[in-house]
Structure formats: structure tokens, C-alpha cells
Image (cartoon, rainbow, N blue to C red; front, side):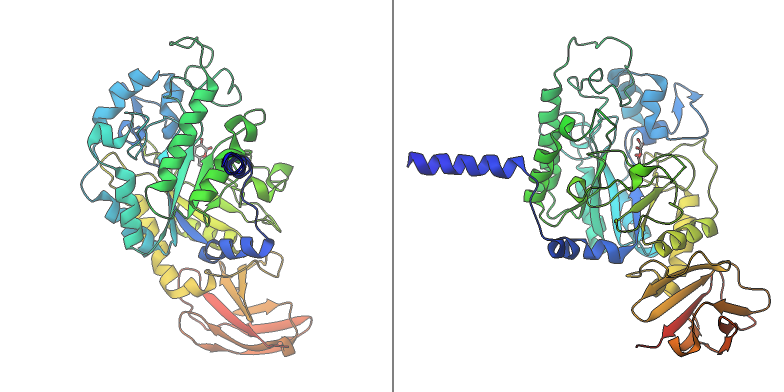
Length: 456
Ligand code: GLC
């Protein structure tokens, strides 16, 4: 009896100490839907959404992440809550509109902030009152999960390991990470990081247990010295994988991969599969992709993740479409952000951009979903994606003389056509390649030419 008990206890230690092992084939099977999906919607929504970039009647700025407003103004959590809580007013059924928009845009998954750095939780947590259920009587995360699933999309949670609310989050120990009180003494005396970690782990277990299978866990974030072991990351991830064996995780629990604009920086490439399934270039597209690694670019439509009434620097919808194609042509995924307002409504500029993408995706989605990186170096006329025997040529700028030149031999080419219309195009051999004759009028925006390669 005692021996049995002992061996059960030992197994527990083994299971909690290591992240669940799998073969490369098992990993490929787990990653399959994500690699196929290529396009997801990110949502940043929390108390900051109600402040909307304004603190005590003053604009905090017109650019940059306004989900950081508590840190930007150096407010402690009580001052922050006093200002922000009365302004956060979720309307009924807001989540249906989010999910419908994601579906309409052609996204296959939605990643939503269960908790951002401010520490406010969209779910009902048993270990804090600083959550949507205790303050507003609603499990907002549950409403979002349900709406997203009703549109047959996958669901992921962005969860911040940084926490500006918890009284034991030790910001002196977490000195590489931001905190509104940095440089000031803790108002409640010395802090105990381990107590915060228990809280973090407990809440992660809550969101991993309450809502059925979760498709993505998107941690944010670590820096050298405050990474991995600092969060008891292996233990955390083994719990997450035990609760959700199929879940896909980013690698920010173990390191912050790359925020700099200069993508020659090695950290993006310095990726270890046991530290997360994919890496996350932020606000930038690596110029040659990240070969051999799963990666996902996350990006805002203006310059802030959380809603700001002052940020009008909206990217043109066509720019976002080119970005999507550019990323996919390099083998990555695109996680495009919306920052809803306090009532859950989506800024009209974002709605318009998502619909624009959706109109293109409905006609040309075949050239995105399930495709892989281009076999060509970046061509002058645009980008290329491929699937099986097919090459998809995305014409950002169709050649003025209507002749598309490709570095292929004629006997490699079976046929060519316009994806949107099916119009068949003539292909002939020229010096050093083939020439595809384009019709006078092409669909807009960004026409796609399909080139069927001859099976060998
Ligand atoms: C950053 C920021 C954050 C944003 C995120 C999205 O690390 O801290 O505000 O949520 O990245 O990638």
C-alpha cells in the first residue's frame, strides 16, 4: 500500500517536472491546423480599452501601445482601477460581432487577451476579485470562446505573465520587465515572488480547464534574467499540456524573441522547440522568413494594441493585404490585431480593413491556406506561394507589358490561369525561362495567377 502511494507520488513529481515529450511526427500532427490556417485575429481588450489613451482628461499620446497606459502614467493599481473600471462597459453580445468579423475576414483562429499586463482578468478567477465576473457579473472570456466556436474558428488565449495588479508580483526581482512602480518602494512591503507564481499557475490552470480544449496559449513575456525558470515555466507548460494535449504555444515564456526592426538579430532564429512551438516577430516581417521554424507575425492596424481614441495612423487595407501575402510567401502566419472599445465595439477602420481582406480571401483563399514559402527569391512583380504542384503568383504590380517572366523551363509548366476568373493564359519559352501572357484587365486588388507544374 505504502509502496503504491510512494510510486504514485513519484510519478506526480516526474509529470509535473517535465514538459510532455513527443516525437517529431506527433508534433507535426499537432501543428497541422495552425500551419494550414495562416491567418488569425488578435484581440487586445481590457480595462485600458475604456481609458482609450486618455488619463485624467489628458491624452497620453497618439502613438504606441495604450494597453500600457497604467505603466506610462505610473499609476498604482488602485488609482488605475478607480479611473478605468467605471469606463469599461461591455455591451451584450459584443463577442458575436468579433467572431463574425474574424470569420468574414478569412481568419481561422482568434487569440484574445485573458489577462494583459494590467492584471485584470476577463474570466472568473477564484483567486482574485479583479476579474470580469466579480466586477461586472460576466465571464467575458467564456462569452468570447462561445462566440468564436460558434463561427467554427479556433480559440487561443494571450496571457500576460507580467502583472501590475498582484500585490506579490515582485517588480524588483522582475527588474528586466516593466512595472508602473519601478524605482518606488512597494506600498505593501517586501513581496514574495513565489506567491505570485502560485497565483499565475492557478489562473493558467483555470483558463486551461474551464472552456474545453484551447487551441493556442500565447504567453507574454520574458527577458534575459526574467525568463523560463523565473516563471517555473517547465512546470507551467507541463500542466498546460496535461490539460490540453493539443495546445500550441508561443515561446515568450522562455524568451522575448524579437521586437527590434533589425531582423539580422540572432534571437529570432535561436529557437528551441521545447520552449514553445512558434516564435513571434512583432510589428515586423523578417526579410527572408525564419527557415525551419514555425513563426507568426503579430501586428497592429494602427500603432496600438489596446484601443486609443488618439491613434489615427491606420494602415491602408491594401498594405495589410500585401503584408499577409508577404508573410505567407515566407512561410509564416499573420496574427492581425483589433483593439475593441470599452463596449466591445470594433473601430470602423478595423472593420473596414477586415472586410477588405475577407473579400479578397473569399476569391483567393486557396493561394493562402495550406500554402508554403515561395521557391523564388523575392520577384519584382510581387510574391509567390505554393501548394502541391501549384504555384500562386500574387501580382502586387503586374508587369507593364503584360508579360510575366519566371525562371522555369517550359516542360515544367502544365498550364497557367487567373485564379479569380479561371481565364487560361498562354505560356511560352523564352531565353532563360518562361513568359506568361497576362490578360488586359486583371481582377483587383492583387490578382493571383495559378501556375500548374507538371508532375515529374
Ligand atoms: C508586447 C507588449 C504588448 C502586446 C504584445 C503583442 O510585448 O507588451 O502590449 O500585447 O507584445 O505582441
